[in-house]
Every structure is written in C-alpha cells, then in structure tokens.
Amino acid sequence: MAESAILSRHLRALWGIPGATLGVVGWPATRRDRLFVSWHYWWQAHLIDCATDAANREPTPARLRRIRTVARGMRLRNITGWTNNYYDDMAWLAISLERADRTLGIDDMRYALRTLEKELVDGWTPEVGGGIPWRRGSDFYNAPANGPAGIVMARLGRYGRAQEIADWLDDTLRDKESGLILDGIHLPSGEVEHPVYTYCQGVVLGLETELAVHTGEPRHADRVLTLLAAVEEQMTSGGVVDGGGGGDGGLFNGILARYLALVAVMLPGDDAAHIKARRTAAAIVRASAVAAWENRLEVEGEPLFGPDWREPARLPGIAGAGYLTANGSVTASRTPERDLSVQLSGWMLMEAAHTVTAAGL
Image (cartoon, rainbow, N blue to C red; front, side):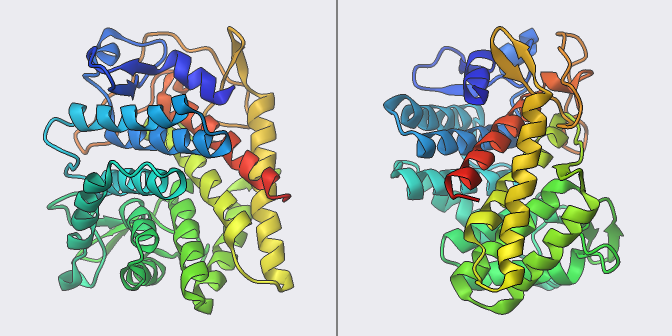
C-alpha cells in the first residue's frame, strides 16, 4: 500500500518521454512540480532504492521496468550526464544502481555505476587527512557524503577505501560524549558542525556492518554495537525513531530504518552482545513501522505518512511548497506530508519492517 500510494500520487512520465519517469516532489503538486522544474536528484535515487525493495519482495515485470524508467528519467532530467556537484547525491544513486544490478540483475546501467564510482574514488582527499567533501570545491566534509560513499566502496569490493572512510568517520565525527555521529567538519580548519541527524547514524551503521561482514575485523562490529546503543538511547522514544521533518529531512528517518534492518539481518557474531544488537535493531524498525502505520492518514484508500511517526499525519494542501536553498538543500513544505521525501521514508520503513519480519526477527 505504501508503494501504491507513491505510484499513484507521485510517479509521472518525464516531459512525456516514453520510458522515462520521475517522482513528482510534492502532492498535491504545483505546476512547477509537475513540469519537473524541481526534481531533487537524491530523492529520486531513493525512489529507485525503494522500487528495488519492492522488486526483491515480489518481482514483477512492472517493478523491474520501473527501476529502469526512473533511472532513465534521472539521466535525462540531469541533462549533463549521471553526475552532479554533490558527492552525497552521487553516492546515493550509486548505491541504488549497484543494488538493482546485484540483487535483480538489472545490469544495463553499469556504465553509470562506473562513472559514479570514479567520481567517489577521486573525491577522497588525503591532502587534508582524508574524507570526501559534501560537494565539489567545498571545505565541508560530512557524514552524509562519506557514509554512503563508504557503503558504495564496500559493495563494489573496494574494502580498503571503505575501511579508510569508516576509520575517518570514527576518528573525526564520532562524538566522544554521546557516541553519535556528528554532521561534519570543515577542513583544514577543523571546525566541527555538531548537529546529529538520524541518517548520519544510519549510513555509518550500514557501512560498519558491511565491513564487519566482508573483512571480519572486530572493530567494525564493535562500532555497530556502540552506535546502535547510542541511537536506541538518544534517538528513539518508546522504541520508535524520533520525529524528522520535511524537505531533505523527510528522508532521514527512513534511511536510519533501512540500515537498522541491515544490521538486524547481516551483523555477524553469535555471542550475546551481537544477538542482542540484531534484535534491538529489528525491534526499533518494527515499533517504528507500527507507529507510522497507526498514525497514517487514509486518502482514497491509500496511506499518507507523517514526518514524525509518533504523531497523526495531516492532509497537505497545494500551498506552501518547499524550495531549494542557496546551499543546495531542500526546505520542508508547509505541511511536510506533502513532500515525496516523507512518503518515501514511510515506504522505506515498511520495506525495512518486511525485511526483518521475513528474516524471523
């Protein structure tokens, strides 16, 4: 039902081009939205990832075709190719394309993946002590760029670089008091940006879990245990992930849920601590999914999720659309439920809950 709601409200042909679709960024949509003047590259990457979830859950020709049409829509709407100036954007698209290839055999976008991989490899900057900047030419090196880039490196078999990224994140952005991952750091000045966001925790959990599986080195699983405990204590209420927002923030909680599910099904280790961690990650996903579902708004028989899964969702209007800021981020709509990002998080959460339930957790 979460999938169906996205398809009916948001998925549209790009400029009438056959075989090219994108998610309209708001519902109800403005004329600007319908014309894809606003389209938000990294939101579409997560649309592909959610479509891949659905195709893995129950493969159908329509689901497989949808992944290809959204990817084609992204390429065409991006005008200049597969890449842009934001390393976090490119990492998210690389994650979605690699996963569609590996899990579903959709291999006709390998050129795109190789192109994105090269950008992320070349983005590493040893001259300032490592890290990948948020965007080209920026002095800001953050978890939202380095976390997903590390996951890409691990999934493409570049374990050495993935470990470099994981170690850099742990050394540079892990807050010694809270145990959580901070937003980012300006280099070479060393000025740290201290906000903590759910998706920063999610991508580091995902990266460290991948490395725990593929390298067997204990530090990676140990970091998962530490960070998961901090997330449970400080970023959940009653076992439910704390509220997010709209705009770009609408995706944050869904990303955390996705990688909590990864911890639940992939984290290695048979001792009590690792078993407990897997169960804890699964329990947070399940409790969040129950809360989001119970607080959904039904509109024409399909769910509309809220930005805070603990609170009842509200019906949005067409007015008060979000906008792109000068620094490249997207603000929330007046009613965040309007934003594709918020609804993608709801879908992502439901797929994560299916993943842990199917694994018997």
